[in-house]
Length: 146
Image (cartoon, rainbow, N blue to C red; front, side):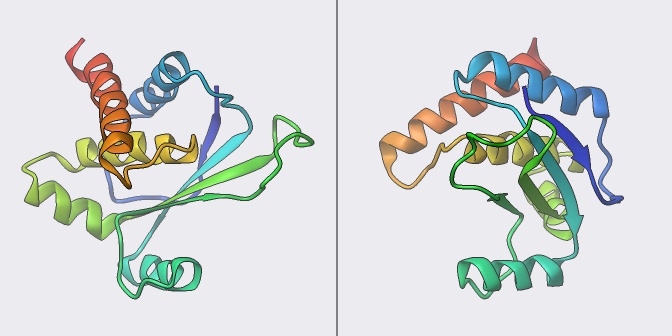
């Protein structure tokens, strides 16, 4: 299972026990290697826009960016930082309002999706979208509906 660290303070409400449960359920449901450390970072809309431009050549803010720092993970020690999820606080608040969710549930939704991206899931075409969406639904159900 991934280890995680929340690097920056956030105005987004969240429960560490739910975050731990998300990681645990993903570890159980997704049969891919999940070790090393994953950082969770919260930034402003301006900061994520700049990161999006620098790394993806997209000139707009986004809700979350997922980064991996290695192409080959074979020589990493378990305590090394291999991943980073960068969340935009303002986007979480705006999307929560748009989708009629509490901001913490919007954050959990984005966290689940981002971890799946880190595990090489994608939603570029219909079949990939279906696979990823099925995992998202299973994980969400086990966390909040179970």
